[in-house]
Every structure is written in C-alpha cells, then in structure tokens.
Length: 623
Image (cartoon, rainbow, N blue to C red):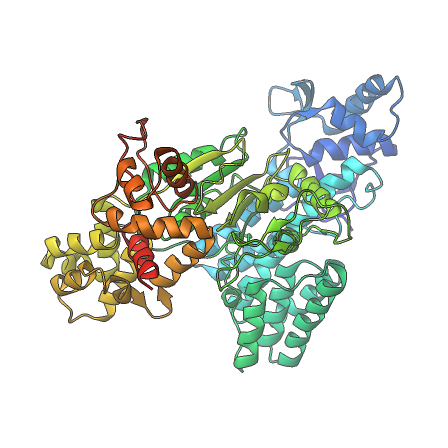
C-alpha cells in the first residue's frame, strides 16, 4: 500500500516515499519509476533532498564494483528521466534536478517527500515534549511514525550506497519510535507501545534504548516478571556476543524495578530523551561560562572541528558545560547526541571496549567483539599501571564506519588519559566528539581545547543565589562573597554549599562563611546528602601518579598562601630548577596546578592549586 501524502499537493505533483520501498504517486495513481539503475539514481537523490549529490556518490550507488566507461553518460540519461518524471518547480518552470557543485541537486518540498514530512513532525513532537506538552508530543511523533512503512528502501538495499542511506533513515525512525514510546510511558499509556517495542527489539536486539523502553512499558503494564526477563536476556546476549555488561544506567533501572512494585519511569535510566538522544537532563542551575559556551557552540558548529577537549580541575563544571552545549545543538546533529560516562560510580575508569560497546548500543551500530589485533597498546587502568583490554580492530573499524556516515555528537565524560580515547575519535566524517577531562590530554592532536578555571565572583554569587534565593543572598552580600571564595569559586563546591544552606535555613551566611574559612573544617562542610566535595577531590587525587601526589602534597603549603613561584616550588620540593619545572608542568598537564593564561617566563609565573584540592592534598600529606 502507498500511503497518501500527509499534506495536500498541487494537482499533477508527485509524492515520493522512501520509508519502505521506493514508490511514487501522482494524483493518487502509482507511477512507474523505470529500470533498477534509474531507481537507484532517483533514490540517492531523494535521500539527500535539496543538497548537491556528487557524481561519484551516484556512480557508486549504481555501479559499486566496476563502473563502465560510459557511466557518466548513463547517469545523464537517468537524471534526464528523473527530470521528466518530477517536472518543474514553482511558477518559473525551473527543473527540479539541476547540475550543482560537481553533482546533481534535487529540489523538493516537505509535502512531496515522506522523509521531509517525517523530519518536520518529529522535530515538532520533540519541541512539544520540551515544553512539557506530552499529549501533543505523542500525537505528532505518532503521525511521523505512521509514515514509516517498513525498512526504508528495502527493494534497493543490494546497492551498498543506497543501503547506507537506508540505514541512516532507519536509525532516525528507530529514534523517533523510542521518543514516542517513552512519551506514552510518561503519559501512563505504556500498553500501546508494548507490542511494537517487542517487534523492534527482535529486529534490533543490541539497541539498548529500545530495551529500556520495553522494560518500562512492561513494568508499567503490571508485567514485572517479563520486564526483568528483558534485562536478563539482554545481559546474556551482551555477554555472549560482545563480552560486555549492560550500561550502568540500565543496570540501575533493573535494580529499581527489583526494589519497587510500581512502574518505573523512563527517567529512571538516567536519560533525558526529549531530544531523541541519550543525554542526561540539562543542568538546571548552569551559570556563567558564557564565553566558553559561545566558543564551544561555535567549534561544534564548524565543519572543520571534530574533537574538542574541555579540561579543568575537579568540580569546575566541565560536564555541565558539555551537556549544556549538547542540549542546545539538536538541529546541528540530526543523527543524535550521545553521552557516555567513562568512569564507574567508584571513580575507576571503564575499559575502552566497554565504552565502545555502550556507544554501539546507543547509536544502534553492531560493534563486533571478535579477538583481533588491538588498535594500539593496552590502555593503563590508572597511573599505577594494570593494563585493560584495548579495542579490537574489528570493533574500531565498525565504529569508524558509523562515524564517517553520520552526523552525531558524542560526549565522552571524565576521560582519564589520551590513550583511552584515541580509538574512539572520528578519523573522517561529520561527527564531533567532546571530551571532558581533568588533565589537558596533551597527546591528542589536532584538537581544540577549552580550559575551565574558577568562576568569576559575580558568576559564583549568581549560582549561590539560584540555590538559596536572591533575597537571602542580599541579607549579607559580604558573607556570601566569602562563601564562594572559600569554595574556590568552583561550581561543584558552590553548588554543594548552596544546597546545604537551602536545607539549613536558620544558618546565618556569616557563620557558614566562618566554617568554610577554617582549612581544617571546609571539606567537612561541603557535603549535601550523597554529594561530597571531598570524594570528588579524592577521585582526582587517585588519577595522579604517585610522584605527582608527593609533589602536590609538598606544594600544598605554599600554594595555600596565594600561589607559588618556581623558586617556591624548588624550595618545597627540595630540588633544582630543571626538576622543579618538570614537576610543575606535569601537575599542570594533570589539571592539578593552574598557570597564567598569557606568556610569561617560568620564574615570573605565579602557579596556583585550587583551594579545595590544596586542602585535600594537605590532609593526605598530614595523614
């Protein structure tokens, strides 16, 4: 069956469908699309509407192995036939297919092509979801899905080029289905999604987001045993096929289902899926960083920047900045935005193979786990050594193929070192990766770097005011300034202090400022529920080599007095100038010491250690 166009089209216009077999109708009647090679050319042009398609791409789609000498002339014949079929556009009678930029460009409107209508409805549905209008979101997403007739271009997938385009379309359809299912679950209508999710999981068994939605829909429908079985089956499949475990988010959902008899919501998996992506919820209290955010958005919007490193000390807001940018860049990455936490809950690094496996599940790409020659040397688990499994060549190749064919944004959060991510970064294609790390990742090139330090006083006070209320902030602005400075003006510490004050409404700001000003008590005061600044400092401390820990402990004394010079470092470390320079620069590279942003000689530079890291280092040195 050929589905009629979603919007009326002028009499005599052609309506094309790619979300299923390639079909076309004019005035309600099916149109013959000619021989197979002509249909391949037409499908390739329609898959990239209103965009120049290079002649080489069309040639590869029609003759993937050995194009004849007459290939270019034959293409001209097929394009001429497409012009006749499509007719002209607008009142000026221009051809819809024109030669442009060394290829051919097909001009077609939203009401004439199902994929354009699908994209418009999906975007409107996601926007409705962001506004909190879940009923409208579910309706619009369902309208988009009603255009999906089956595997896109399923009659032409024996052409490698068309198959790649078809897989891109199918991935987008799956993402919209996940959006719709999760919206229905949020509305308490999980039963309408159960059967469709089961069918799609059977066709895409390694797509984790589908599994999570299926688990939730079964659980909400009162079928808890079946929901738990979905997880167990998936865990066994991953172990058998890839040697991996489900993601921490999915495991947390499973534990939540075991511990509760009521339905779990999609957010139990720790994902905000309003954008059809795999991003945590946007940070609500994001404050400041305007220049850095502007730079990051500009870099990710540039076709020439594939990798951006956001570095800074523990608690400087690297993850919040990366996620803020990712949430703002929905239209720029049509194939999705994905966030993967590189570390486990205890702060230890996962293996590159585990991270790549999760990326494959989120993006819907099968990443093989066959034993093969690794892409590089084994990645150390930490500064003390202990090799972990490297990514196999087959897995790396599958991931690179996906990156080269999709425009997606990948956020790899809390990267331990350069070696960990080398095999995960795109070598070609339009995808971009944001790496957050405490260290500088100096061994990566070419990348663009954005370094985060402390917030400006005004930004830190703005963040504190969001948490305790501007009225309370105005009761004692001097004490509020002492609080944020005692927190080192780091977003994490200011946030924890604000959350603590929000609970302790009786506590005067001046008294809390005095507590934080006491070096022996400051870290004890910066705890709110299960969030502890000391634990975050401890995680950063463990990342340092044993030699850097010893050096930082000795430098913590002079650093606490307002920074240290190279002469001060030589005295504290008990070494000569060259050794002191190497040690300080090693700590800068690790993100434990900050240096001036402008050029200055080593002897003239004033080096600093973030106040709270300094306090933690002094604790360790004293212990």
